[in-house]
Image (cartoon, rainbow, N blue to C red):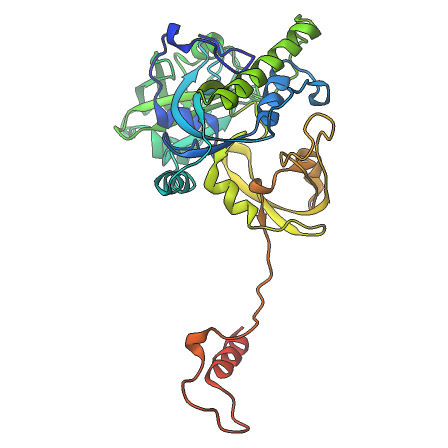
Length: 394
């Protein structure tokens, strides 16, 4: 079943879903995506949810409606998470059921804190952005040597040419067979027979990405990441588009007012920022006093599923949408980036997305470093000696 573009499901009991391999789902979602654990406390930002819907409708966020009496954030307990993939595009998304809460216990806070440390990214995988040659129906898929040697079964190099049959399953448990051969000048690893059928069936183009992983059972799996292409405008009217936004906001407002659960969808590749985050992550960010000129780092995904920290500076603090979401903390930080690639980075971020860069400073030595004996006149104390040796070692 295709994920509803409105981002929530009115009656999920009537829908049957297939079980998705968690490791493959997370690999397709990206290296920075980490879903909170079931049972933990989370913070839900309806403004961010509305942004995801706007992206799916190809509508500017400054024209999206708001909903009266809906707070800019809701503290909820994550009751359930189900992983899904679109059968037509292989686009991964998560179905979440949230229960608004007014008070919570210590155990729930600890579960939320665990959500900061868990990672479901597979340890053995490789991701490659497809080239024009890779997507040619008359060619094959060129596999980097290290990736082939790490993920694929070893070739018998005594054969001429070395070759083997590979079998891999996708997100829908469909089996794909490829011929893996080592040939050419210079020699390289290629997937040939079966590859053209795969790319034509999946409708892959240059710029899309294919990834192979070995799961915990050592089964070979493969997934996709679609490139962000400009899609044709949807035929839906402005009224129906607004209705979708109002629908998701009304569901959240009704759940908060009646203390009832509500269900939503999260698309990690379509959403610029996560709009459901662990409460512990939010609380940790609130300890930071954001100020103009503050330096920070922020993680971004790079080519071939890598990650990199970029440095930036806070240049302003203001509401992203002061009319519809006055006082919201969602992306209320205006930022500038150090590198020339700033055009690819967002101009606004949320406080919980960044890592402040704080210069260390020393006010006085800790209590345990202070001498228990009276200091003689003119002689430095123990703490002073240790701190001086520390600075001399730097």
